[in-house]
Image 1 (cartoon, rainbow, N blue to C red):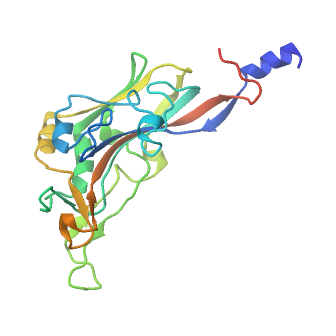
Image 2: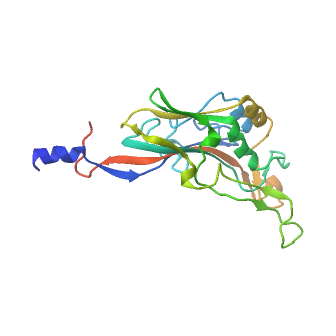
Image 3: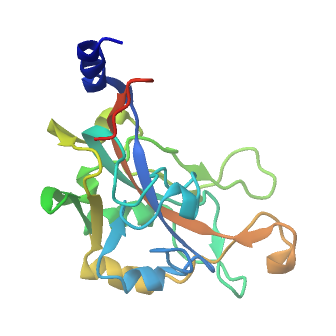
Length: 249
């Protein structure tokens, strides 16, 4: 290949829409994972909660993070938006003694109104906002009504509510205008910090313990440990080198 053409090709980039995400898991025996917590009480004790700089797909699995290396994007990236979400089981949760935990799914979305979000590129703070200003832009939405005594009509006993931080529409995320240009292998991370009120609330919740789907109790086949996820997603465009024109500078 002509040297001039080869050098020109090495400067070209294919643009690919690509989200990056990282997750904090809260649940029984989850604390062994880097930055995760065994209970809401442990989450409440954390002064700051870090994402994108502690886990990778290799350490927690692709379901929870799709970073190849903590903190570093291995290609150039145009960061367009960011969103935060609690992901909660749609069914009720029970403590270690099998007693129903007395809180609704709505509570976790409300707690995001008492939580801040900071987003950093190297040491430059690109965003400092309330989490309610950065909806997830995706996720389950609506409510579940319980049906009692075999009735076909739902009762007034609402067991679940809005399951996502804002309506699940992509346009609802926090938009960066202009987009943030992130060079390859520069440090990126996000920090969540709950208010004293939210931390006090989390410390008193109990759980998450177990999810039950039958009457067999914790010893029955329908019991498994519950997990609540706190996830941050970055939406944007990867700038990928062309095949056979890679340069590693």
